[in-house]
Length: 383
Image 1 (cartoon, rainbow, N blue to C red):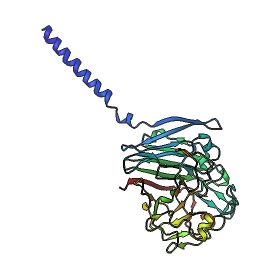
Image 2: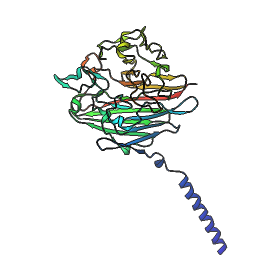
Image 3: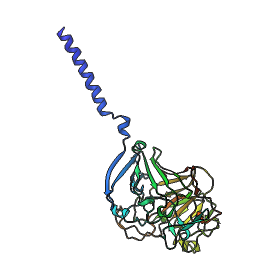
Image 4: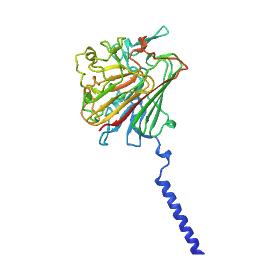
């Protein structure tokens, strides 16, 4: 009888041990999806800035800070499976805090791009904005959304999704209305970084949000982006004047250096004798995108690494900026300096200066309406 009881005890203890080990070795889904957070820096205002790391099952990572909802890093594999950071950024946190002069990785608002003479009119009232780009207003002003502390919604966030919220007060940087803004970054298992924007207002206002990451698919931030191939599905682009404000016309790209309907090297025509290229010191223009709704509007390809980035958006335009004002004043994350044309932006958005251009799609938002847009940067390789 004692031997039988001893055998039963051994069996039970063994079973319990196996069950306990299996529980230890196999984390729950909740544990696996826990939001990854680390200390990043302390802002000049004394705020504790955190960095959040999003991951997917393939090994990609995106790092975002709650200051300016800024993307500080984004990795993607090349044709040999090597992961490298492919977005420019500063090496010192204080450079993000001290004005972020290049707008590296920034969430831009209330208005992405330029507004002529830093003013616009709504219902007969003129609103004066910050002049931070010569006579014009650029990317929300000196204290735009890229300088703000965003609140992380931890309940809506996990290791592949980050939701950040910010409330812009009525009159902030000259804009009317209290604007409640949310952005959701999602790094999915299809190697795509999704950016979903939403906003509501309590007063008639204007809004045009975008993301200002600089891409260099080579992973070498000392290397110019002129060896990348770009495609943009757009029959027209928006010419600008000498302060880079739209002239109001839409110009066909056919027969000009602005035709990217077929994928071509960025460096092919960037030095062409073209008045618009001279004004922008290269490409710094908005393309009027074909189609409507969420659709693929173009792609970026780096032949040497094999990396491909598709751009998918709901927006009517994209600002292609070829990094013409990068001037070597800051260190890169791969050594050296952020020199001329070592990164490029593809900023999905409404057109520049729309509040002052009646023929452009409206950016006016009324109380009771909900602003919602989405942009996806999807990565793959071509061997």
